[in-house]
Length: 114
Image 1 (cartoon, rainbow, N blue to C red):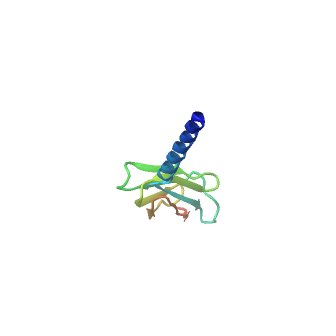
Image 2 (tube, rainbow, N blue to C red):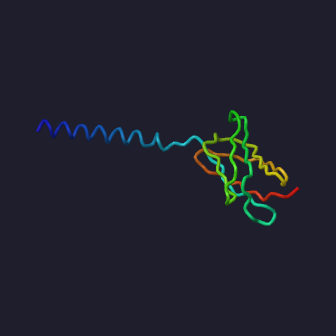
Image 3 (tube, rainbow, N blue to C red):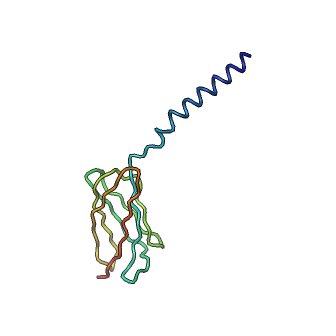
């Protein structure tokens, strides 16, 4: 009887901790920026340097596009960002993007040749 009481008490404590901890783990105070970069003909551009800067963030977040032209910047604090796209032979493009907490913002771009 005492042993059953001990196990049921432990199970109850475990369940209570799990219920309390789950909402805390689900909170995501940052956002993400994703997108595709293409050339004038609509073909994917590989190796485009995508840079996001903002006063809300120390330094810059930098990634390059993959062979499908896609990119993803993660763990970005919410706020207004200046996003710059650079690739040799193409005009550099800059745009303003708003990042929200727990959301993924999409910013696709078609670059023009120099």
